[in-house]
Image (cartoon, rainbow, N blue to C red):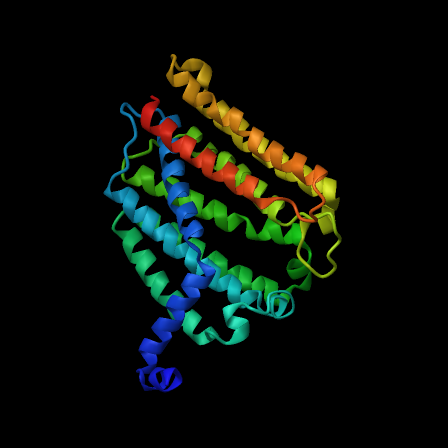
Length: 312
């Protein structure tokens, strides 16, 4: 009966339903939470360190940036689903594109809609915002093409990271440049330098989630290339870079008490990835614990938002 009902539904509506199910499966609520916190923490920190005359507050333009980043992250997830299809057939056979729960044509149609919406929304902020979103969308497609023609880029995880990470930098640039255009951030080198904080925070998670004590031939794990110790150390180093970058830009020693205590919180947060590394060494589980890495990002971003709201 359900199959009959499905075939009696007009094809466009069936495709919309399949895209909605894909989004529910592959774009979990914590991805959306990450996108929201990323934009708020990034815009707020850029405003704080660019030394505006007033304390930062999110405005309507901030909401537009959040929506754009959220849908663009979904777009990039759709790109990954297609460019990783051969790998997923072997290592992730339950993925929607592999199982036929959605087709490549449906994903590409959704990507076109997302591109139109994100570019149009960004145009309401500034031409520079729209240009950077076009760059993000285009870079995602370029990565797809590059991995299709280069086996080395597909299989060398370190090279793959070097090639793919710039899309995150482009999204960061979009938020900062857009906020400059709408007046929340003053153009200066400090506003650009906040990218260091967010690169470190994301990469500590990226290394953590692909680190294992067990060699996994054919799988994309940093520990395969760097060794278990090297991959775990890279995660810790990236966390330290994020925190030191924040301290260097926010300069808690220049804030009066009790605001200075809030400015020093990121240093305390380094305990979280340190506990994760300790547990990885002591516990028999093969894979690096991901929860501390996730907890560090969320705690750091929330702290950055609070700093932006109360510090001057």
